Every structure is written in C-alpha cells, then in structure tokens.
Amino acid sequence: MATTLRQEQFENGVRLEFKEDSNRYFGDYYRLRIEVRCRVVIDAVLFPETADPAGEARRVRGLLGEELTWTRHLERMGVATADLPVVRAELLDSFATSAYPYLRSPEFPHRLLAGELEKRKQARRPFRLVK
Image 1: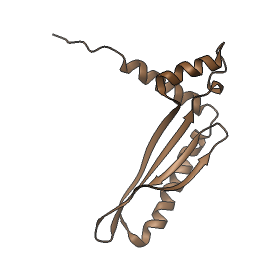
Image 2: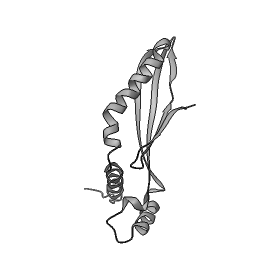
Image 3: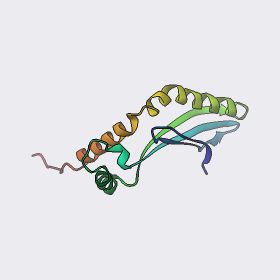
Image 4: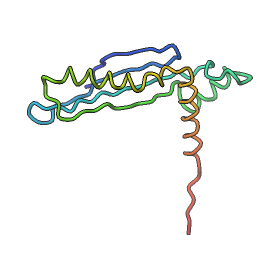
C-alpha cells in the first residue's frame, strides 16, 4: 500500500502529492518507487481570455473531468535497507531541483490544459483502413 510522503500546494494552483510504493525484491535490497502526482483543478481562472470563463470551465470539465492529473514515477533499484532514507531524499531533491521551476510557473496550468485538450483532439480521429 502506498504511503503519502508529503503534499505541496503552489501559488499557481498546482498541488503535488508524493506517495511511496517501494517493495523488497531480493534479500536486503529494495526497489524504491515514489509516485509524484500533480493535480490542477479546472476552474474559470484557467480561461481569462474567453467571454464566459465559467461556462468554458464547465465545458472543459465535461470533457476532462474536475481536475487534470500529471503523474511521474521516481525509481531506483537495488537500494539497501540502510540506504533507503538517503536515496529517498536524493530522489526527492533531484525532482525538486529539475521540475519545481517548471511546475511553479504561472503558465504551467494553462500549458497542461492545452496539452490535454490537444491529446483529446488527436484521440478522436476515426480509424481508417488502408488497402
């Protein structure tokens, strides 16, 4: 069962959850696995340039749900029991150093929404047999 390590909320509305789902796979060695889940609530704030931000938010929630979720996994194999706290801290620090500037950006929620809407458009193309 996954254990919640920590949760964070950024000023741009992004919420981060860190959950550990590690397991012992051989003797004293573990597969250290941390799931990072980024959540953004679909709200009228994401649509400042539309004539009806609340209506646009309702329409998009109908397509994508109440919130957008972006998930990444941080993983390290072969970690000895004694090294688990140190390696866990290294993985979290490395993620924070590389991803936090991007995730804290005021544009991130808008870019995530645009990417999800684009994926939705591409997924709706009909299948066509080619002879």
